[in-house]
Length: 216
Image (cartoon, rainbow, N blue to C red; front, side, top):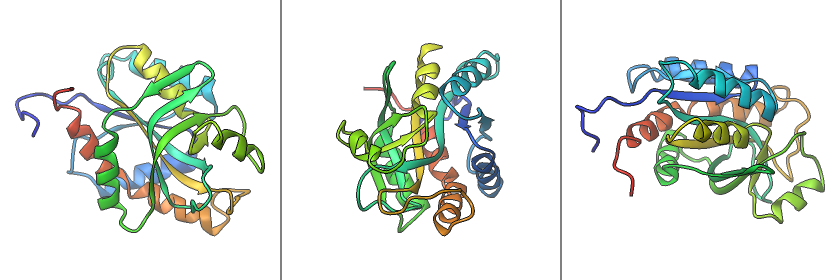
């Protein structure tokens, strides 16, 4: 167990979209009291927006030592994935490089408890500069990635470049090879993903507490 005398670093949770931010705010209110209140940062879409928002946020004195968790929706690349499944990255990657994630096992176990019955997939999360559709999924899957989004890789790379810290990425599948979605929130899959994202905060608090444990 972490030493209670040690002050936990703050937790910064980054997402891109307004609907993701709404789900997280709702979840944070429901989970109030389970851990220190996180800072929720809406970065805007795309790698450049994520990088700028993260760098600015971590430049504040109150957040300079924060652990960083990138979250929101993603496109699943693996056949058999369903909307509402969870992706826990063991690394994020884009053309600029790869970032290893911290505490993946803790997140997998905590998410299984927080959102029972949902699939939890672990593997590389790749970045893209556009929404991925159709056959392009197969090409990304061939690289070993299990899911794709537009911000996680840039978010975590920016976070570790500003200083050593725990980082992680958890995404909720909003569409998958057999379940392509055109507009979030207007189809059952989008609604399902929203509800799951709203429920993950207890797992994020557990990961935050684990960040105090000695690194090996």
